[in-house]
Length: 18
Image: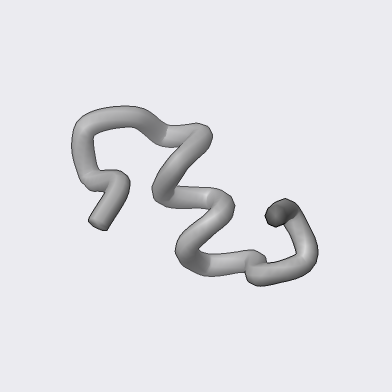
């Protein structure tokens, strides 16, 4: 999930971003 926007992708990779 979050392959459309790079921001969402970063959140998926880094749970701390949430």
